[in-house]
Length: 280
Image (cartoon, helix red, strand yellow):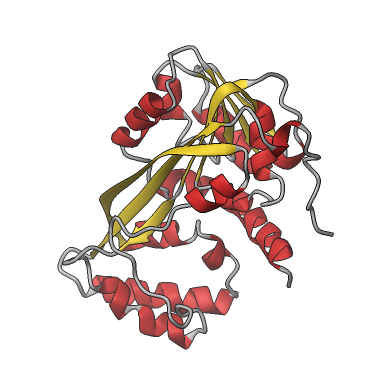
């Protein structure tokens, strides 16, 4: 399956898990939002555009800080959950596809939290450029699993089950420690449309009981796309092994890399066709 088709297939899986996503996915550290506001030179009342808001986990912290936000969300179920979660805030949730959506006005910030990698690579930077006012900023970040020194050994121990069901780690891959997550600065700069002004790393830890952890796994595209027998085998073994632990829980360490880039006022975007480069 071509990479763009696989990306589209996997990103469509999230809407099936809207309720689980809202319950299980962790939020982001307050420090990330404080840094974002300072780096992007935002003022309460500014109008922001969020790409792929999910159920609103990165929307609510900024709405609480006094910003108006328009969210564009592909999944109808996720968009409905976001509207419910964000009722009472100055937030509009539009159900649609960012690549095809015409922004009604220029925004001070375009941002995406654990969603940017699902947007068509040929269109995401031109579309963000067009949606921003002069001097506006693009910010992207995502949650990923990191493995600190002295972290929970469960994830190494359970790897044998992933290998057994044919879902093991790719050859040559390794478990990244906090501060080692890759960033997209080269890709951002290569667009010719943005200048990266800051890259910041964050990490935090969450403790999950067995069913909480399984619900979390059931929000990841790879697990959602697994054959039923694979999930049954994996989740059954997770339950069995965690039941043998005194506290029946697992400690998962999270990491995120915030990347903030300023819109360039020259370059290809002013004349580029946003559809240029789309394959198919």
